Image (cartoon, rainbow, N blue to C red; front, side, top):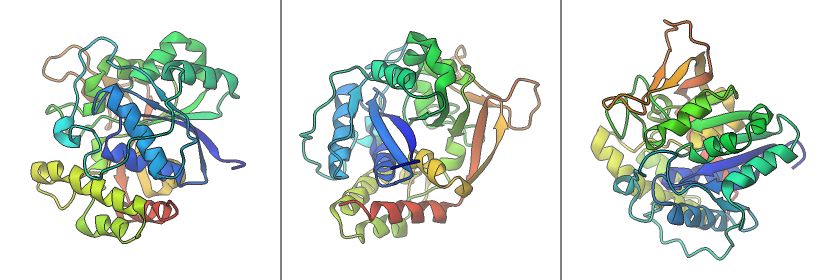
Amino acid sequence: MAGARKIIIDTDPGQDDAVAILLALASPELEVVGITAVAGNVPLTLTEKNARKICELAGRPETLVFAGADRPLERKLVTAEHVHGKTGLDGPDLPKPEMPLQDKNAVDFIVETLMAAAPGEITLCPLGPLTNIALAMRQEPAIVPRIREIVLMGGGFFEGGNITPTAEFNIYVDPEAADIVFRSGVPITMMPLDVTHKALTSRVRVDAFRELGTRTGEATAQLLDFFERFDEEKYGTDGGPLHDPCVIAWLIRPELFSGRDCNVEVELQSELTLGMTVVDWWRVTDRPKNAFVVREIDADGFFGLLTERLATLP
């Protein structure tokens, strides 16, 4: 693992989160230092359990999994069982995890890991609401300059929102946390709906996972069969968007993506546009650029990478 990029995955699994975790665990370029669970797609008691189920599916029960925030900083928790099913991982019948949940709180783990590592050594990969990351920044501001980069799935601009007309789910659930993160000064790469909606799980792409003939391949196909139903109906597409694995794929093969540096602000006041990520794509303001916003993806290359890596898992 010498030279592998060290990452912490902060997540609320979710079928697409599950595929992102599998991709990370299957990629020798990355060292998953820990997985921190947050409430989001489903409540925390399910997201921490789901993270452990996925590690066991991948044959990696030694992975450290921590539970973090069970609610947003200032708001009531909004969840998405209507998309992910009541467990958050509906589709395959994954066994109850045997590997332990770590005793330490996820926020303490993030803070202690960043303080102990060399500056610029750890990349944070949030796949859900940004509550844990914001709490860690609040708890120990000294971690902020030590973070190498934050690569996150969240937001939308040209594509609008998926939980309200203007807001993407991860940002909408905890807009205050997102605001803290986007104002932090840490280098941010943002995977909004604008790019993830171009990475569709078509029938052929899902069948490629099934044809791997492994338990991971079969479980992945079952996860995606369930997950895409909602979006296929909503968007009238062959397949649904595969959001979260874009974060991990970017770290492995950034050449699959393109975008530009922009200013991104999070709306906190308006009832109409709460949680909207206001992306100054056309640079019509002089607000400082604070995120690299990804807009294009080589979808065939992306699914090729996923299939190739997941083929190495049991």
